[in-house]
Length: 84
Image 1 (cartoon, rainbow, N blue to C red):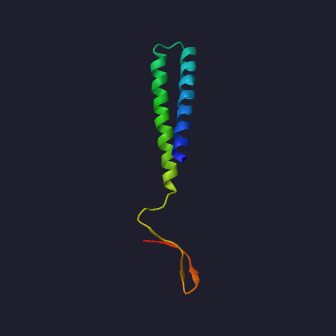
Image 2 (cartoon, helix red, strand yellow):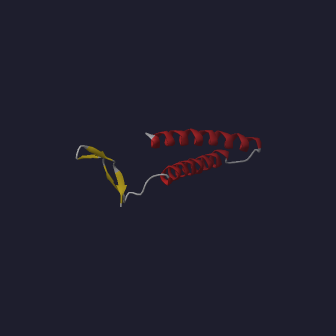
Image 3 (cartoon, rainbow, N blue to C red):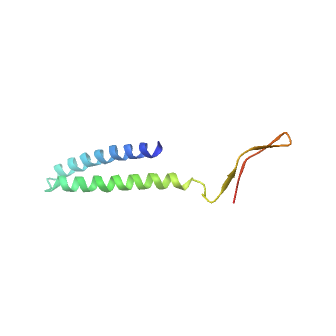
């Protein structure tokens, strides 16, 4: 679910970036403003998605760890833990 939210926000961000770039280039009366606006919005989309996914992956745990769920031994609950 989180990745779909990031992609949706990146699409909204890139559309806003497209119109902002088009507006600025229109004020500067540059030629090929649609091309430059599209290029900037695609680069912005890629940077946004990559930075968000990188930020989310920094806090994830090492996949080499194995999880032992809680168990009942002699009538007592033994806590679960991660081990290598």
